[in-house]
Length: 338
Image (tube, rainbow, N blue to C red; front, top):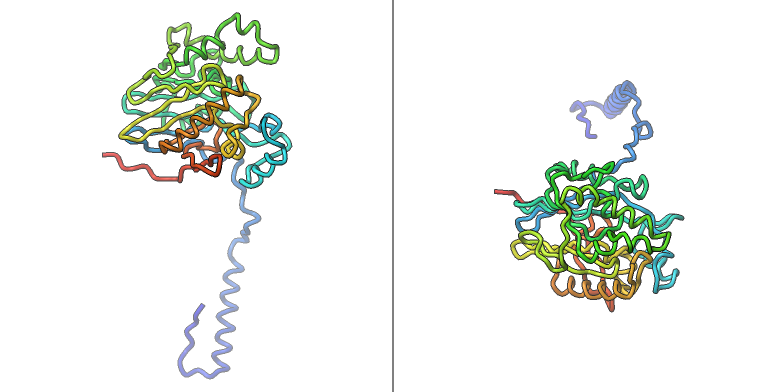
């Protein structure tokens, strides 16, 4: 702080005046409330609302966060545990004794004609750390009643349970779309009855989730490759489940593939697409699908949205040695609308 001293004053006078000003300032500061950083209340345990908007041509895409679960690394196959740990550490991936933090994401696409939700989260099917999808949707400025189409990549509970709420349609004005091959597996009573005991809950989740839509005539099955709305086509990505589907959104020459569960561990499976996970119903087929779609995404420079990629789970795939790498989207403002 620069202090202006009276011109012509002696050095002693200047010294005494400076000391006096300093003492006066200190006295004023002493009268202020005694507030320290340690006394400032900490923020709540909640993060910001779980949504992120992105413009894709004329479509607006909104990533919706359902929550996160911890998955043990022992679920991954085809790679050593030491290599897994080195890859996780190299990317500073959060881990705990329960496993690796893994996001569950859904995607809302406003095409101007349709409001389409791809995957609806877990609701109450997988514990308290999931089930935030509808809250994220509302925080993003939408209401469930505005959604007119729900596209399910597959019928695992962390994607399908969220379409219902206490046995009722969570999206009362929506038609739910699921591939024929997926429905033939999870919704078939005989297949469910023959399934191993540990798999029975997954059939139950799927059947209970679609039941109110089925009863209302609002469950629609489609063949892989079908066009489901203007600018939206399905894409077969089998292996994780028998009828696992992706959805390609196209607007003004830009393309976004919402690919469901092609990747569960971004740190491990991008550089090593041959690594499978226990949840894959046909691991060889899942590996072949992953290799094919990673190559396509790289060559065609597709935007990708993944259900288990770190939120918001939107970005690109790049080549890296014999494998690939995940290039997350940069936080960006939305363009102004006319």
